[in-house]
Length: 142
Ligand SMILES: [Zn+2]
Image (cartoon, rainbow, N blue to C red; front, side):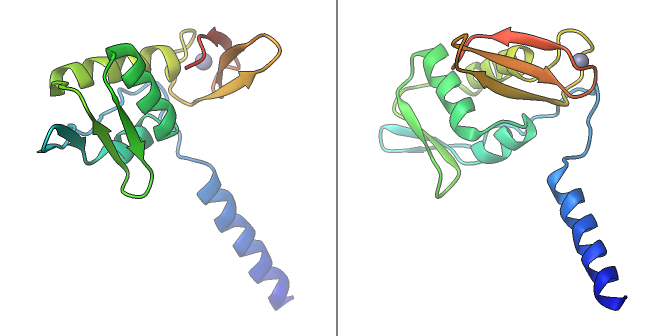
């Protein structure tokens, strides 16, 4: 009995950890990009945190940002930094993060941010799937 109870508690804990808290339609408060210059590069030190707020893989957010702005750079998994080889202002970064949120995070049907991206190999498209209302929105792959 004791063992079983422990198992159950463990399962519950696991469940809670796996399911992110629901944010509903609330505005996503993104942390201000912490930017430092190192030689010719600009490093966004809290990029991983920003991506977590957007509930997306930092690689995908980085790819979007670099593609849309034409900037060179990469995401460094070890440090969680975005390393930019080009000049990008804080304002530009914030603007594109908001665009990303609008297209790849927020459900256009119910405005919830409790969504996920699914790859649809067959259609060569991605789908923004809403966990709140069930709507699916085809989006351009990044
Ligand atoms: Zn929805």
